[in-house]
Image (cartoon, rainbow, N blue to C red; front, side):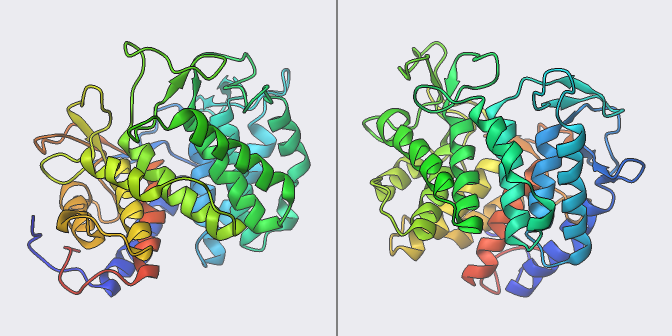
Length: 372
């Protein structure tokens, strides 16, 4: 699929720094509270009535911390401070998951998923030189409250099923914390998550399952699912772990990449779920497919022509990034390409930023790949 215009490396850089980051740090911010909106509509206006997930505040903090803009980094510090001072329920001490539009806490399950993004934001701030704004001790304590016999509980109530996704993000966060601090504790936590991937999450044949019982036995097919976007995401995260730690992961990334590529639809993009294949495909799995393709090419492993990073980016751009709001995106289409979503989730910036930065660092964008 060939886009009608061209986007150079310079254009992609311009899109990120002159459209996307200004949009999400401008209109995407609730200036009355200095927090971020959950989503914008397709005209670029804030969806002010939506409840706000705490993880979105933390994902934006992570994104802003990764820039070299001191104003955005200050915004990242502010969002992290909000999470630390307003994100824990004063009665239970549990980390919030969902906030009302007035920022009062609606749900505070102390979920591993949300805690992983608190740790990831902390890592990004330390890496950016803002360690004086991060106290890791209470975060370590918060994580220790979820420690299980193997891995970590989903939340303070030890809810079931147990899931791979939260452990994947804990793997991501603690790898980043080890890179930022050199503290062995974080490498050890990452290795526990990695061992679960090898022993439990990835199945013979390559697919990665989502849901398990308390003893890490996969749930049956009536409840079970596979998300190819998560499989692609593991490729990037495992590669990063190997780079940061200098240790082999014991995971065959080439085989995992082949399994991911086999899940693509007729556009060369990933559906949201397999077994059976669903009709929807969101933006974020495509960003993870792009990152996985970049990792594998750097390792000297290439798929078919449609698996080239430039081609993935081209189709992704045409399907999701060509909007009436520069710097925005469409969240979801069906497998025929029809638009299904009506908002632009702020949470997608976490995926988009990482993928675009990888493309720019790789220098992979050719002068005639994308439309701007």
